[in-house]
Amino acid sequence: MQNITIISGTNRLNSYTEKVAFDYKKMLEAKGVKVELLLLKDLPKNVAFEDMYGKRSSEMEQIIQKYIDPSSVFLFVSPEYNGSFPGILKLFLDAVQPAKWADKNACLIGVSSGRAGNLRGMEHLSSILNYLKMHVYHNRLPISLVDKLYGTQSELAHEDTLKAMEKQIDGFLKFTQYTLR
Image (cartoon, rainbow, N blue to C red; front, side, top):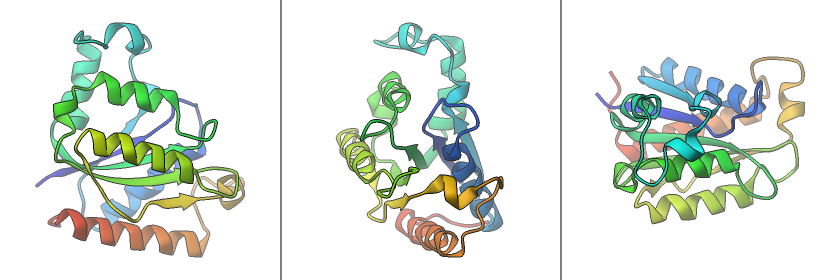
């Protein structure tokens, strides 16, 4: 059975992006899906200088072997940074050999405290993933006003957003032809 890897696309500590990623993980596991969660805050601290242009640290190699190699299905949860997505996510994509992404499936979730839910960032990320020959699921979910949706809670309780997440997950599993246990 294939793994699904969720990538929390920021290295910011205690982020809403991480909360959304954990909520997706719980929803997928409730459906019997085996999920790995990669938090980019856990990348090697010197990734920009030690893991680029064909070089590879043992730390980064372990991350690739655990999260990228065994997975053919990825969920990217990405916050809005300056009208796009975080540089750490682009750096991570660049640090992994392009062939490791080819012919794999991607689902995009945008997160922002603004009204657009990182629509521009998801469009930009979608273009990059297409360039890497990934198959990007059409239902990209923008989660807007995320700070208000969570408030002081650690879990999302907004019914309409939860329904949209469920619909996206069900469609993505069908799109990837994921076989449940």
